[in-house]
Image (cartoon, rainbow, N blue to C red):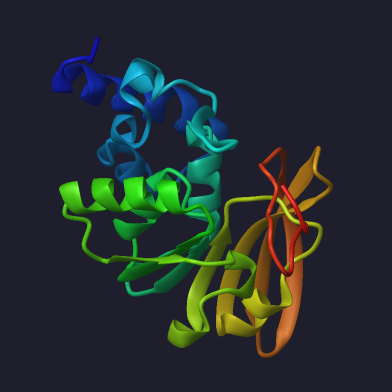
Length: 219
């Protein structure tokens, strides 16, 4: 049974207060976006009452919507100020793109699975999140037509940082990506400044596989 809208709002507030703030999600804009975007609309109706739980959820086709804390952690690591152009690789449910759209000027998001992209686009349109542009493609090649991007976020784990994404990252710019094997990755904040690339590990994570020319070769 679908909960009343007021109950979802309370669940969002608890999510922010109990899952995010105690784990050092401190950026006010990130917390505000997480407290505003209706996460329950990005999962199937039967799972909406679990949408604000401290865990990922399946969205079909072997993909997941990430745990709220991980979405907030990756968002905060981009250091967005509001004017940026952001590229997301792996639209999935659309939730991460929706959160980003509240924090920057424009989000370009690429997804390789058609059914997921169609559903995400429907939710974006229903919420009037009109600054999100979508594309069906191999995200490991980026979206060169709109480069450079002030920030890039990758929501799947790959064996290395895809070179096209580094090339499409602005200078200065920040890229956040899980890198490692298929079982476990380290979430990296990759900074480009004055032509130099610096990588820092933020957290150890487990994401679905990044499939494509510059990722894993098969699902």
